[in-house]
Image 1 (tube, helix red, strand yellow):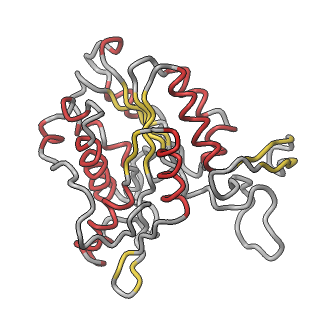
Image 2 (cartoon, rainbow, N blue to C red):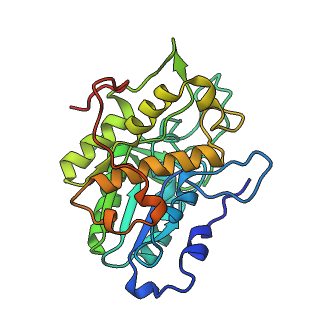
Image 3 (cartoon, helix red, strand yellow):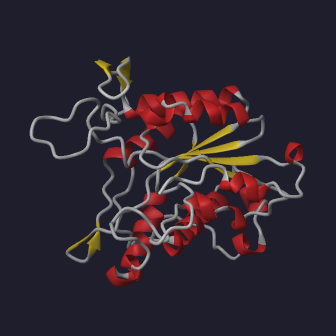
Amino acid sequence: MAPLIGLCTLLAGVGVAAEDTPTLFVAGDSTASAYDPNPKNQQGWGAVLQPLFDEKKLRVVDVARGGRSSRTFVTEGHWDRMLAQLDAGDFVVIQFGHNDSGATNAEPPGSTRPLRARGTIPGIGAESEEIDNVITGKHETVYTFGWYLRKMIADVRAKNATPILMTLTKTNHFKDGRIECPAASYRLWTWQTAQNEKTAFVDLSRLIADRYQNEGPDAVKAQFIDDTVHTNIAGATANARDVVASLRANRALPFRKMLSPTGRSVSADRGAPKTSVCEALP
């Protein structure tokens, strides 16, 4: 099902003077993207975020696109189209990683995965790889996951707007009755980049993982469609509330003053509990 791009743009700006109202852009993949009504009720958290904010104080524009990595969100032009809308005083939530682990170009021998050429080089270093892209037919330099995050941060700051790095949504995967949440891979790299670049950070992985652990496998399964990655409307709404819990807890950001009555009903995140299933980030 094709994402409904601009859904939140259409809904958020009605009767509001856009020039007087800051915008929160959501840049990510299918777990945040807006979708047309569909039999599976698939929805991403960015599509249901606006009702948690007072639209006279903050507009939410969901530009997330299903299937995109940090790399292809840039190379396909989605990032530049968002930048063209970005004004001073706006905010951009940046959440990638689910699709960054694939092949950078052709799939290895024996792979049964579809050809996508969307992967990034693991880590946050300065490594790069020169390829002739098997999908676009163009020469391309592929960089690390952290490189693409740093580019996004710099681009947002160049517009006098505020970048916010966010870790991934969690998949519905219990192992021996426990949600796994290591301080590794994309969660770690997002955190390290936020620290290095002194950027606002939301550990959404931790909030969702602890909530899933408390809710249990049956309740968590009911929040997904027919796979372990993509949420239905109920799951997207719960994830959006976790986003708000973390944003309103960060006193360096103004979001606690921008909430709707529904948003104010969400308690601010108090940090990782002693019983957290997530490994602490360094």
